[in-house]
Structures are given as structure tokens and as C-alpha cells.
Length: 177
Image (tube, rainbow, N blue to C red; front, side, top):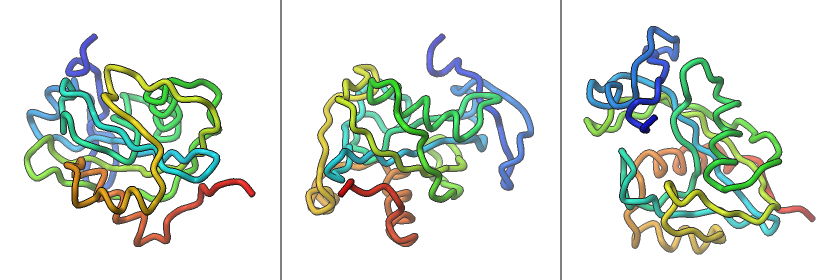
């Protein structure tokens, strides 16, 4: 099944499920759906940053400081966060990502609106990112990430989640020690 054929829950402005539709239709009709964003830190507290592949349906070839994606039909945010983090990082056995905040994101006509659940997780495992999703990756310090905000083309929904995390106080996953 292609990404465009994946079945998603369609939700309302209050995040209540009102139906289901294929992802391609959800995007084309601008229907509200659900996504997860997971900020991944390594043992040193650095943040996983990657560039999306050019084949992505939304925001191809752009940089992101989160892994994640759409929540499948009938799937919980928590289930999607763990699934997406393990898939994109190419690992198994991650701790369950910790929820931090949610917000409704409006893509200004790109693919509708989506409820965005933001999580954090620490990954001490060696990563082997999914080649269909990740064209380049690295773990960057907060300072390195901040320095690249004005230099690289970032996914707008990831930037919105990043700003909300900053307003929220940064969130919880920190280096050990």
C-alpha cells in the first residue's frame, strides 16, 4: 500500500473522530487528521535532526528536528509515537515516548490541518534511519540546531512544534548524569 492509500482517522476541531479516509484524499480535501512529533535525544542530550527524502508527500527534502508522522486509523497517539520513532530511527526497544503537548496545526493549504501530539524520547541505541524517510541525519546540540534555524529549509509544522516546546519550557528528556 502506498502512503497515499494509508487509511487515517478524520477528526473535527475538537480532535473527535468523525470518519476515515485515505491519506491522499485527506490531504487533497484538507481534512483534519492526527500526527505525532517525537523529539529524540541521544545519551549526550543532542537532538536527532534529519532531511526528509524528496519522495515525501508533504514537505519533501526539508529538514526536521522531529521524527514522526500520521496516526493511522484506530491507532492512539501513544502507539503512533512509538511506532513512528522506531520506524524512522530504524531501532527496536525504545522506551515509550513521553507526551509533552498537543496543538492544532494549519498547513495554510498544503495538506489541511492536523492535531499534533508532541513527544520526547531518549535513544541510546545506534540509529539506522529508514531510507524511504530520511535522506541525511545527525545528532546536533541545542546550539548547533539553533544556528541552523535561519540557514536550512525546515518543515513548517516542525518549526511550529519547536516553538511551542520552547514556550512550554523545553520538555523533559535530558541527558543522563
